Length: 396
Ligand code: PHB
Image (cartoon, rainbow, N blue to C red; front, side):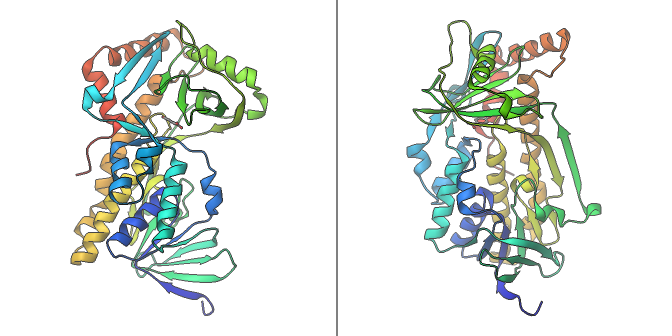
């Protein structure tokens, strides 16, 4: 188009969430240029409440690559979790089982740190863009967009990274006959709240009960994050504070344990599904994070998996720019999918083991307790959970 302003860069990145910004940061450190475009405003992303657990590998990536060490100061290291069922808590001791920990550090803070780092380093990140479209992905890729001031651009790049989330536009630019999408739906969703209350526990509690699943997480000394399993079509307006707390009590309280309650300051229904798009590449387009795959939130793997994709993709791009060889880049999809499917398995397993489908019969319920007991009563069972939760060693 004649009157589009042309920008050239090496890597065009769709999406300024943690995946897109981390990729841009790693590329910049290696002397590779990128331009990031994002539909939402920086403020809107900063205000989105997301999950909060970082694997040790994700923490290392943030700290060692120089994004920020705030996670080590403001985050909380957790050396285990509790599985609670049949009125009893069972600790999974990560440190003792696999020698690792996770950090409670909300995704919002990861975004804030990355956005600040890119800004401080002079990164080209454009928020609030509209009318984006992708062109010539198998030749010389171009991304068209209109910036927040209404100026139209053509971004020309060697490669495009699609890190634009679960409703990815980059993904839909891949022809139907060149991609396969694996999808699994769940018959439940999460009702998530923020409550003004003290901590009920120092570690996360994943609770299974005949009434359904609940998760007790934390945010600060005075604000807590908790979830309970609900119907995907649930309307938050039907839920008073009293009804919410009664639901939590029926799922976690008992045998001397009592949740600390307080005013509910935020409530949302979170729908989820498992999905994988394969391959995670089409021509010069590489997908990363939620654009390529989503997992249910049980285990909080979404962000961690996205950061792993980015690390693997960065290695491929860096190797190409250093040597001119595409070998590592060509292996991107297979290398990333290796961890994606292990994580799909773990997230599916945690979800099915802990949630109670509506209408579950007595066999299903008793079998589920058998499964939970088989995990907590065996060092091998606990160690599988601990290894997967804290994050397997790096990719092949
Ligand atoms: C959270 O704190 O938001 C959180 C923690 C663990 C999960 C999911 C969400 O598995």
